[in-house]
Length: 246
Image (cartoon, rainbow, N blue to C red; front, side):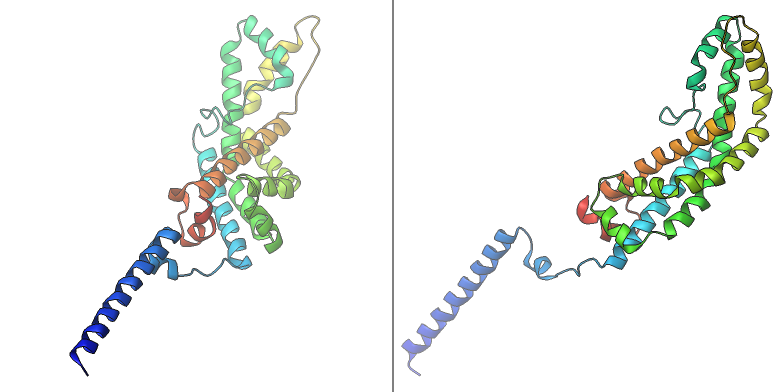
């Protein structure tokens, strides 16, 4: 082969190499990343993975929430879920404080929160049982929903069952913290005040509702963290299901 032909072939090869490198750079620039990473296509999520991811997220969320709520002052010192004097008895609270029973009112309110904290110790297995019943169809809808969609689903599907299971636990808890010891003197003193409407709220029902509401608020917080905060996605499955949404 003539020397001129060899030189021409060499120049053509170099030109093609330069063009190839430029093309690769242009592709990377257009795609916004390293071409090696771009060419690694991740398998799409399966419906089974979504369902397992949602169940795992709720298990993490409910366990964390139950742990926080059942700790000492888990309800009492958390402004989000602190249980106040029964709202329907606000006038009663005002009058009792006015006659010098403020300390007793505060002690009673503390026992309400202690009862909820005690009851919360029993909540995790109830939530886990409900989570296991979540279907793939439910999970796909929840994944596309709002940041508290799973919590709303759990609340909608389990409130009745949770209430029936939870109330006896609350009753036992109110007994264990001696709630009636603080309540009886208050209600008796109030009902002796002339011209007041006699009342005696169902404390077991009140604490049950407040304890459930408080737990769901905490679960909603946990769900939002898992959906939006990579640091809260503590397993590979959670990272895979929620990572792209964070």
